[in-house]
Amino acid sequence: MIKVVTGAGASGKSSFAESLLEQSEAKRKIYAATMIVWDDECRARVKKHRQMREKKGFETAERPVDLGELFVPEDGAVLVECMSNLAANEMYREDVGMESCAELRAAQAGERILRGLRLLAEAGRDLVVVTNEVFGDIKLTEEETAAYQRLMGRLNRELFSMAGEVWEVVCGIPVQLKGKKEQTGAAGIELAAGQNKEGKESLHMKFITGGAFQGKRDFAEQLLAREGVLEYETADGAADPFEAAYSRKLVVNVQDYVRRFAGLEDGEARERLQEFLDRFIKENPGAVAVMDEIGCGIVPVGREERLWRDLAGEAAQTLAACSRDVYRVTGGLAQVLKGGER
Image (cartoon, rainbow, N blue to C red; front, side):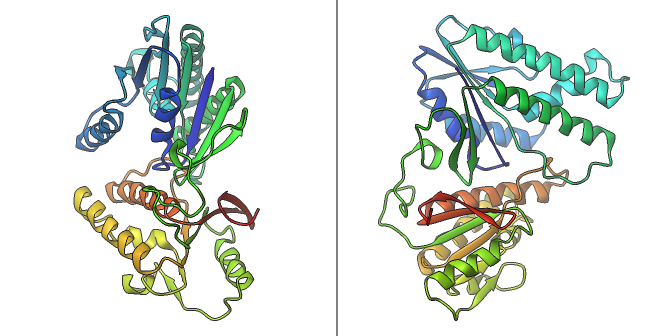
């Protein structure tokens, strides 16, 4: 069976996809890595993913292009991670000619990738594919960017059609879009409403995410009104100090609190972020936290923007795991991801 996992950057897709591969009854499980390692940032990302796969029994195969040439044993299952890297690698590979226009290169890349996916699906017992939501970027004036996004859109449509199961991971919570409804919970682990990752006593935090200008704050205020909370103070990550988040009932623009750490080195940034989240959760467990989902788009060029996006995704996973109720608001409509009123 083909299973597809999609979602924003740093949403927890990798962990969940690995849990799907672990469920396969195949004797050999192959992790097809598509990233080309060319700088320290790539090396750090590869190291992180290898640590995630430790002791899971996966065999790693580097396959940045020509996916169909991957050898799959008769009783093997494959995890391909991820489509966004593979699409870029195939679209810009020098051995097939860079003189063609972007649209032609994208079309040819799509044919090679889809042919490879079909071969893997025929050869193995199970195929898990990780893809990305890269369609939130509005900068479509560049021919190359637009061609790449159209290629990703084509790949996702074809993959979703071929797949028996399709999942979107939001803040570490898998939402099944296609297939038999069998699993819920963060990163493939059953979580009761209000439990954190360690299964500790329930918290009372509410976490609301979604794109910019979708009505998240209005929905947060509606939740508070339903509970009879009509007077409260608000902390705004775009303007207020960290201390405000530790005591005020409504905390908005959490992504802007996170952004303050993006100018630091990776290690220090994550350490400082974790300190902020630990204190926020401990001292303000009854808060309603509102955070923009900023990971749906082309990966930013600037290092700080890339780090901010990763940190924001990691923060969202932590807050969602430690909240009783998690909502995603789109166009003013709230989808319940965990707990909450249905």
